Image (cartoon, rainbow, N blue to C red; front, side):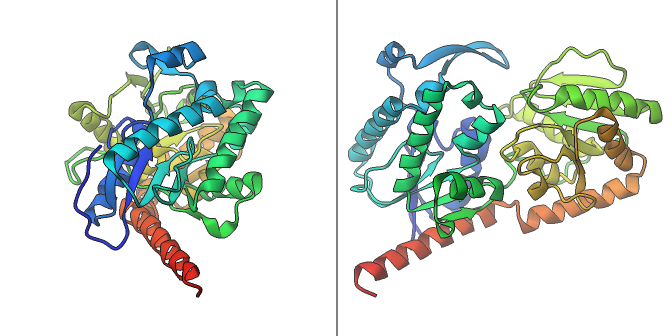
Length: 392
């Protein structure tokens, strides 16, 4: 837990699965958001609800999972989304809040637990809903049994019902909260996100006009195999084209492909290497079949790269086809190759689309805008609630 002086008329404590200021929590989203909100005095305290106990092992909470650096113990998602886990984690959070004597507004990143009204109202912020992931068969939700799925939905329904406001990273997720959970549209606000990759703004890097960058840990879900097949066709037209892969180490036998592997964003040198690859590349490519938002897309934009992506889910909210990149209607190799070719064979066009992407960041994908939207909405809600209480 940490605190800072409050310099505004509204503030909140941040709650998340993992400490909010940890760069590994929610792919770094919470750390960046908290940092921006602190500048305006909107943050009181921070809490992690990832308060596991050894006794949880007896309830099936843990399992072994492959990680970038080998096998590790992880919390089983079917447990995390269960009623039993939600109640246990909520009880442990109550202990933290009582110990800190914390009262006021709360912002929960995710929707795992209710926050007892005696501490104050709470809002939630999410990138997707359980039904969205289930329909796509992704993020372990697709592997739940029918009973586990319905229990997970019931937990999310209960938490959303108790929230005074909900914030989403995309309109795609917002619509699901409205359609799948019956939330009133005026209670759900899309705020988007800024870049989580902090880099020096002007370090010099020589541009490589035929280099494509892919960043992703989950090679299969991110559409890596489809991208490589499209790249093979592209090489028939542009023999000097290159594809750089960051985040994973797939075995690929294809000329022009360079595998950088996992680069830890918590390591300053490795983070700088990632930034360098962004800056020197001509474009960024991501063929995910399911992507709630995609931090890497915003990272690419923030460093002036046009994007080639599969048009699915929220992708059309991020990529403006023909203006900041190109959207592929399918993941066929020929479709991918043609989209990449449009950028790589015309460096001036790629440069212009990259400039457009930077403008899009200023207009929409900026942490200051995100924090201001949340604070404005919560402040307005608090004022309106106060007026209601006194009879106006």
